[in-house]
Image (cartoon, rainbow, N blue to C red; front, side):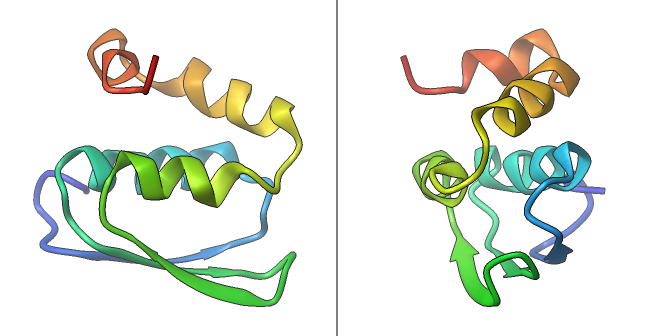
Length: 81
């Protein structure tokens, strides 16, 4: 999906690692993604990997670990140090 899309719009429950990975895939392609976070009742836009990391600052660390487990090895290389 992320390869073909020009931008994304996600409704996220604040816990789904699958949605987090889809947002990440858009972020590594520098494609904007509007995320409505149901858990926090907030909306944000990601444009890059740094924005994706900021999106996950407020979630349980296990959610990020689950998202990273679903990434390809090449995608994991795009994560900040």
